[in-house]
Length: 346
Image 1 (cartoon, rainbow, N blue to C red):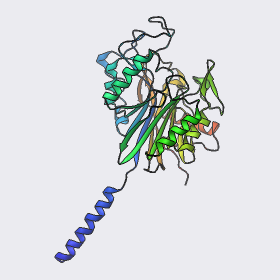
Image 2 (spheres, one colour):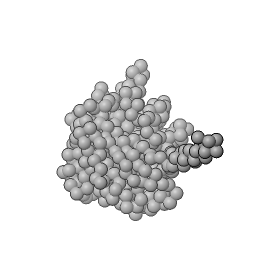
Image 3 (cartoon, rainbow, N blue to C red):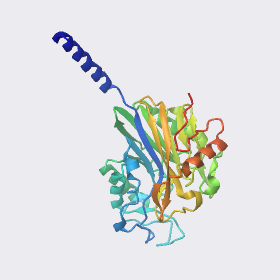
Image 4 (cartoon, rainbow, N blue to C red):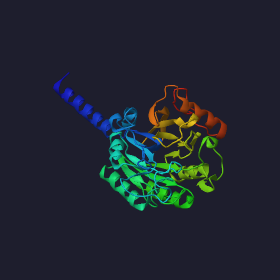
């Protein structure tokens, strides 16, 4: 090859590599459900320090993503009193994690956390503000209080995050018009929008998904199908639900994945983990920069030893989600292989 031809060849190669390197990559998101790493109130429900974080066994699966998302059930706060319970009452459930546990969340790879749930206000406004401050200091994005959102940019793609719940202190899942406007506004300057929603009834009786308003002890907990689909119609690219503490159906609606409950993920000491309550999942989702669903899989986990998550090699959470999807959403059900991979229709 002549010197001139070699120069032309090298120039073409350099241009080709430049085009390829400038191409936008897909975004890999891993999302989990409820996280409560142990509570200082009442006493006796913190993992012994010498045993390390309850996240240490599952950490490799959390950090292996562009964005890792979860719901922080309670606050990170070393002080504060709760108006809900008598001191050290075992019959009342309130959650206040030590502030030092924030480092466990950071080390495990969490990028975005929902503070929109029914336990964020257990110890009052001061503990909410303290939690927000700590997460800010660690560069962990959060959404919770009315009007709050968060953003991240990965692989040149700007990603918005909004968390909702039906109760106070939070962006409301009972106010669909406001929620729709929030999503539409965020979509104006973000390529992707992720929604986290803490809602629905709780417990084993709540595994099946009703197409109606749900209640728990008389409290309205949202119409999850209507709300989640409204989020997609407004421009959301992924909707991740939690709150019932058990598996629920998943669907692909207008090309977007909605998981109605990722259940318990890492809930130490105070959660009922009997029967199906001990199973949860990591939803591993791959999206194009334009929001196209390129693939997804469920990594099933099981909580043991008071609430420490481990991989469940029997994939029981996957089986639960697949069967519930077929039963509750037959026309739009998300179907998964026994190994957890979403079956995408051509």
